[in-house]
Image (cartoon, rainbow, N blue to C red):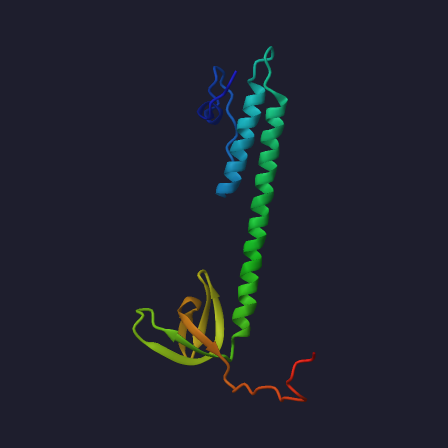
Length: 158
């Protein structure tokens, strides 16, 4: 006996059994809960004389586990990217930068005095102006960089 998704959600298959509703508000958690409920419903209401292929259920279970692990890796990579961006933005404090206005008409230069982290990423305090990372055009240093002193000959070794 095959159960449709609608029947599994409402619990209407000729009996009055209803499934518990997920208590989480996350969309991912709801999807996981729905998948498990559908899988349990298929097992519960299968024909005992003609049971479903166990290999199929193992494959579905493996796919579900794989999907969970991929989501976990994705979440961790996102957290790592956020941390890396925070360190990079923090290292820019004191740098001389140029940026373009939000309207795209005027270019300004100034020194980064601080950085705050908003929902869209780092926002720099440049001489009193709040400038998001996406508006920066170039980054330089406030002190001139001197080339290293040259020593010895510059001819390549044979």
